[in-house]
Image 1 (cartoon, rainbow, N blue to C red):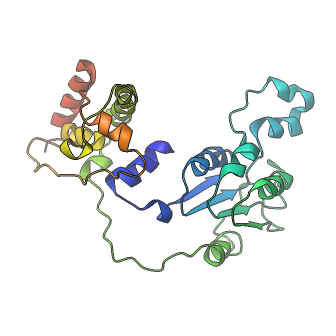
Image 2 (cartoon, rainbow, N blue to C red):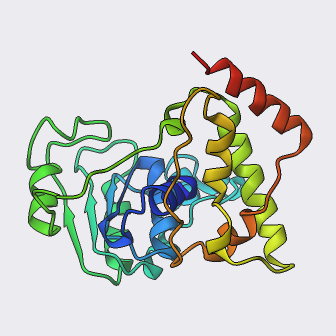
Image 3 (tube, rainbow, N blue to C red):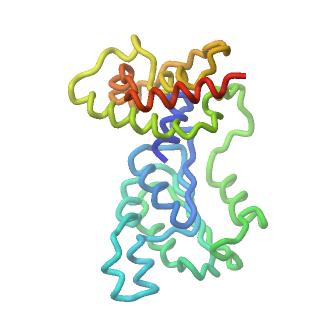
Length: 246
């Protein structure tokens, strides 16, 4: 989830207040966690659970204490400040509707809860406009047009498996370098630009990516600007680069 937000902010330069985070079922955990750290344009939760342990307690009773808590959603949603839409079907037999109601009560931001009487846990949200479409249009100030062209760099479509590994390695190295100081962000390309340079075929004209945004990830990106991939990773990326050549 964080990698996706970094891509939107640093590469596509999409404004934070125009990003909506959507989570369904267990995916509500990462969605709430992200919204608790960043004030996004909106948070949409479908069939959320208060916590993984609470859900297990509904099924296994006292044995739920052995479950490691990964998603303390009830605690984290109190730290969100983004407008929050919660949708929980009354016929949900996987995550009882009370979970959604408790999260709604704990949320301190502007909020709306919708409980469709005929909606189950895996119901198609587009099968009835009253499930998702209408609540979104009524609750959020969604634009009906945009004059900005969204340009996605070619390397983002590469099927190479090394992209994720290289990005995570870059972020980890950047975090380590950040404690030692970093150079000015305007003088070096971003981490994504480094990755793009490896994945762009030799015959293709290089594409200059936009400068990263300063607002959220300035320290990490600035430190990551001077990252050099490990030899093994560099070798794999070089091989991938030539394999993508026409």
